Length: 214
Image 1 (spheres, rainbow, N blue to C red):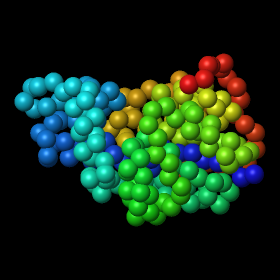
Image 2: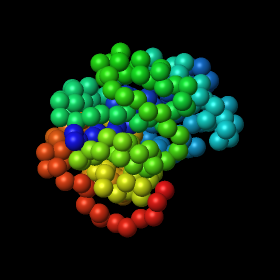
Image 3: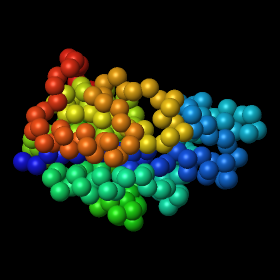
Image 4: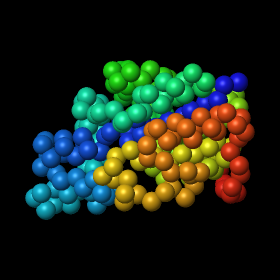
């Protein structure tokens, strides 16, 4: 069986937070600090008010799918996926509501990325395990910007290699490497080489730690 690459989209294939911040500024007079990975600290209304968690999620729902056209391609992502697709299957696993699925498919296609897209809510461990079983892949690599998803995958699918990538330079410097990822790489040229090497070796990820299911 072919190897399998399961990759996130926002801040991995497409820039999102910089454009989300611009939209918050223009449409809602909210400052968005790119250096904060914690959105409760990053989103600051200029009138001095405090946003509830529901309000923050509401703004995110306002961005997807209506403002998705603002998003731009992460450098070298398209070329890396095109090269890896010669030897592997590729699935984009994105944490969006299901009604955004076709919007994401069309959005990625506009950037020359045409692969299966799965929408997900919550941890990514179980869907990654499901996809690995579905494809019966000899080797699976998972790429995501959020540490909690690497932990989730480490619990549910420990045989999957986990690459932590934060493609937004303004954010990357303030985000430490995910403790449950095998490697942190923020550039697709280097990531492509690392992933290709894992595929060529043909071995599953080493079991570094014993974790319960998630």
